Amino acid sequence: MTSRWSGRSVDSLVAAFVERGKAYPSPMLPDDVPTYNRVVHEMAEIGDALKAAGPEGERALLALMDHAHLPIRQKAAAASLSFAKDRAVEVLIDITEMNAGEASMDAQMALMFAGEFDMEMGPIRRPNPIPSSWKWKGS
Image (tube, rainbow, N blue to C red; front, side):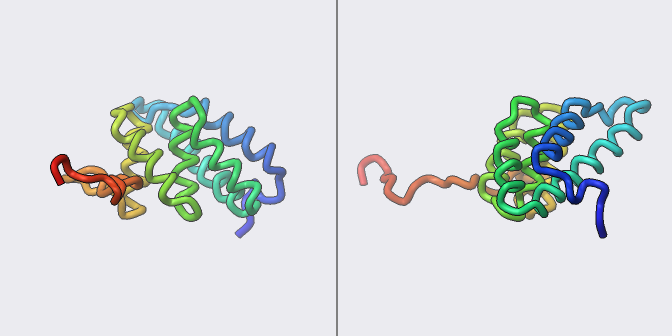
């Protein structure tokens, strides 16, 4: 299935992703729910179009995981799970642990779908465990 985003340049996709991320409404406000649903759907479509653009689109999503605006960072990480899982999980766990409202809840959902979050235990793993060269004191 072809979306309205396919065939666009990576730069225009990034601009559209950022524009929608900055307009990210709260799903907790009843008047904003339809807008929230539309924005979330559009950002997912744009993320898919960036992945379909190949390495250049993937690099753009990786860069967006460092964006200052939290919803942009969260949606970029969720879109990157298929090709940069460790980095995406790291970003999503960080957002989850911020307890930053909707972005943290959305990050939890992305982690759950990726098999990296348990409702009772929280994040299942940290992508960068303690190095094997680390020794207990006195060992």
